[in-house]
Amino acid sequence: MGDAVDALRAEVRADGLADGGMYRLVVQSYDTSRGPVPGRRERPVGSLQRAVTADELRHGVHVSLLEIRASANSALSQEPYVLAWIEAGQPDLEFDGRTARPRPGSVYGVVKRPMARSNVLQISLNRTLAA
Image (cartoon, rainbow, N blue to C red; front, top):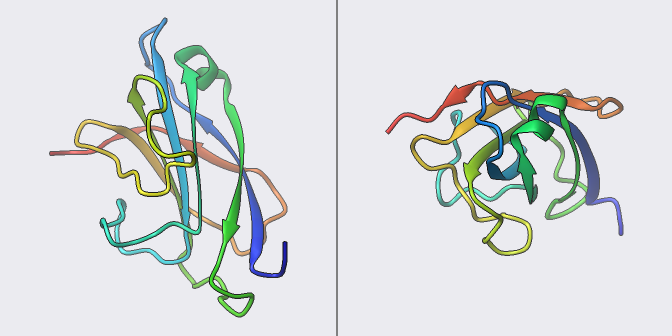
């Protein structure tokens, strides 16, 4: 697919969730950091959404997403990060959740992305977005 495409692998975990609930998991990667939650105009370079259960999140959900940049020369900045969050319910956004943003009350996790991409990135959903 070219030099402007890359892949990211991550494991997302969350504890303390009610059993039996279904959640929409959204994972997005960004090349620059402007705060823990991106603004409406910022666009991720990679994103996905999928349905998960509380039990799956306790054991760790493995995800892979494609990152598509404007060009191969669009190098990672010094502050790339990955944002993941869950919301009650099933996936109901466009295919990959690219324009989704966490709502107040969403349980989320954000991690700085290392420049080397060889290992699986660990994301813990251990924060709640304030109103």
